Amino acid sequence: MFEHCNGYPLDLQNPLTHNAKINWKKVKDRNPLLTLTSDKVKVRDYVKSVLGDQEAEEILIPIYFISKTGRDIPHQNWDYEFFMKANHFSGGNMLVQPGADPKLIQETCENWLSTSYGQGMHEWAYRDIPRRIVCEKVLRTEHGQIPADIKYYCFHGIPKMLMILSDRFEDQKRVFVDENLNHFEGAQMINKPLLWPLPPLPNHLRMMEIAAKLSKPFTYCRVDFYSIGEKVYFGELTHYTSSGYEPFSDYDLDLAFGELWKKENSHRSVLEILKSIKSKKLEVIHGD
Image 1 (cartoon, rainbow, N blue to C red):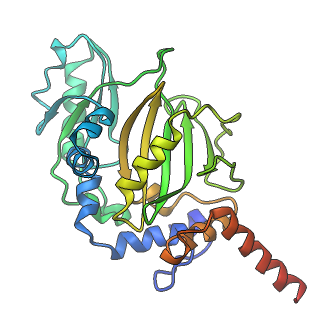
Image 2: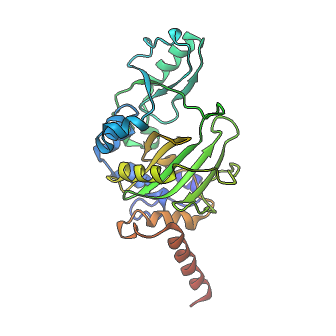
Image 3: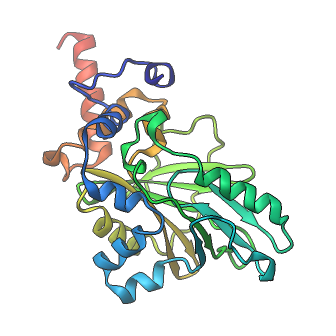
């Protein structure tokens, strides 16, 4: 499956690329912090332990209700929308409006709670998360839109790339830039339209700072945020981004990010590493 998606075979003995190393992490890394920070409930305690209660409360999205069964959510008494999420896997979320069908809500919750996650893709960290349903406040911009996702790819506690993803529920667009907001060619666009010009990022430096603190214990992880006006909201920590199956259109960029898994390269920029890789390939081609 890895070879089908990425176009080259998976080598777990000597992984070189970013996507191959994500798969190595799935199989080899058993840090208990991976499970704790993959849990959409317990990660909130992790954020508080790292940032302190005051800063954490500023960036954590308010939660209305947490359920073990999905049968006790009092949504029929609520006159506001909310996001319903499964805490133990990726993709388990649903926008619920006032007046939503109670049967649909209960069936969805029961389906999520009865479903184990992670084994199919060998994503170990999700396996032992206690399953819960989380009812969370819906964030909206001043124009009433769902805010863009802003995702920081961090290596050894240093953000090296961010993806900005807009209109994720409709006509999704995305763009990849480095920490200095230089655009990357050849990233994981998967045929999505380019989000350009780059939208304003007034909270970029603060999100960078928070991402660095939250990602510090890990060789690699992604830290997700939302930014509305001057407010920053924490989304989640992700360790197995796209399970390592979302291809780079430029294989050399996949290699460059693979190099960032090495601590000795933590001071280098992706563009510097990418330039070096392409330069060495030219030398081989020309026989220098």
